[in-house]
Length: 133
Image (cartoon, rainbow, N blue to C red):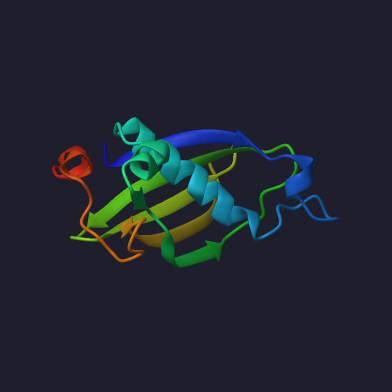
């Protein structure tokens, strides 16, 4: 599955004094979407870490179209973009409950060996899950 969607409700703690989602929280929304995209593919971050692999973000961009507000029900769409030997890329779209596009984003992550802290090719298990996308 190239795309996956989850829904989250904006909590009060995620907003500023104007009841608008603080810009730094969008990275967390993207992470939530990415973690669930991977889980939906049969790969969890916990499984990767238990198998000696970390997946840090090395590049992240966001474009704000409209504000998300307190108590909005957001849909976070995570879109698999590409995977090379050691990196994986995603695009993101966040919509409100009226299906208005609020934010877009992009991230690049690198598979890293937890012992050496060097980029590594992911396990065959992970590669098998995403090879046909």
